[in-house]
Image (cartoon, rainbow, N blue to C red):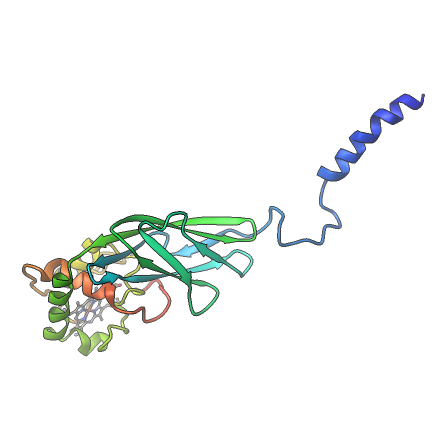
Length: 210
Ligand code: HEC
């Protein structure tokens, strides 16, 4: 009658290890970290021969602390931002890089598309900004309404050009009510305005605007 008891012992030991985590006070691990929600879910920035532009990514969820990293540094690098929920990506070269964000045992990846521009295009874009009164409405640094790297983090080049040239709001396709926004761009100005706006220092955290 002793034998079954001996056989049971390892099984019980195993059950104790793998059983429910009642009494487990280690909350930093375990399968329960809430999902991380990044904004934007896909980000855009640029690079030219003078250097890479930056784009911030804002996160919510998780356990409130986040680690930002890049599995490969070929296309971008990432550093902590001004607050724990911000990561700031800096472009290294054209392509698509991934930012890995972890919190507890939750993980999420944000693809960042880096478009290569020339410094001449960026300079042409700076001219567009200076000569068309963009700063009169958006502020001299493009901060409000935010058309810097933070405000445009979620928008593709086509969406930004649609806003500038045709007054199409990138959020919902509706007309932008103020400003006309039917600027005619030629030559280097065409991708250049996007290069210039993306090269502007982030005015804040990326956010959904109307
Ligand atoms: C008369 C005021 C005015 C002028 C001038 C103006 N804008 Fe705007 N712009 C606005 C307003 C208002 C919006 C809508 C903002 C929103 O919906 O969040 C907007 C939206 C945008 C957007 C879309 C932003 C987004 O994320 O939805 C871009 C890009 C933009 N402007 C770029 C420019 C550029 C570049 C110039 C100059 C060539 C310019 N704007 C000139 C007022 C102006």
